[in-house]
Image 1 (cartoon, rainbow, N blue to C red):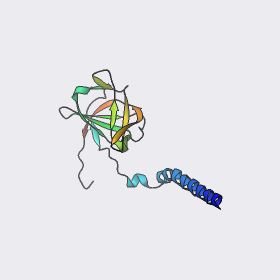
Image 2: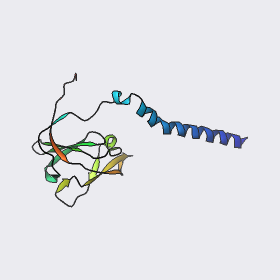
Image 3: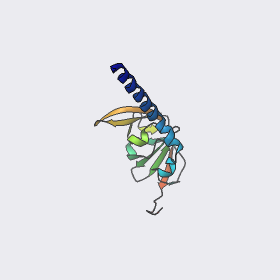
Image 4: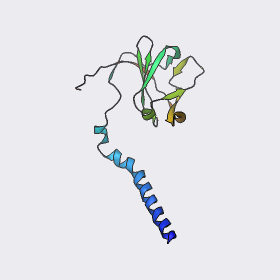
Length: 144
């Protein structure tokens, strides 16, 4: 009889694992985009894209989603970086690190997502940066 219980438990586990594996597919086909509001604020392009920005001028960075980072520079200028590819869990963890031997961060550099796990950080996906486009963020009213 214990062998049958193990078989039933294994069957239930396999069914649960299959349902868990299919959940993202079901969510992707549902009306999730309508329910999920973008965290990327609208912006007006105010200059030509550049390949690099000076590290000493970066005051903060705002991860908007898996593909968009706004770099706020001293003086208030904002450069939006649209990564060429989505960077897994960047929008969820909203933290990243980079390493460069230059005094600039460039579109050929790689960022690595920092995942907050149990109060510590683990390295996640590594992704390439895109060009840095100077933008002016457009303030939105609460109603729209």
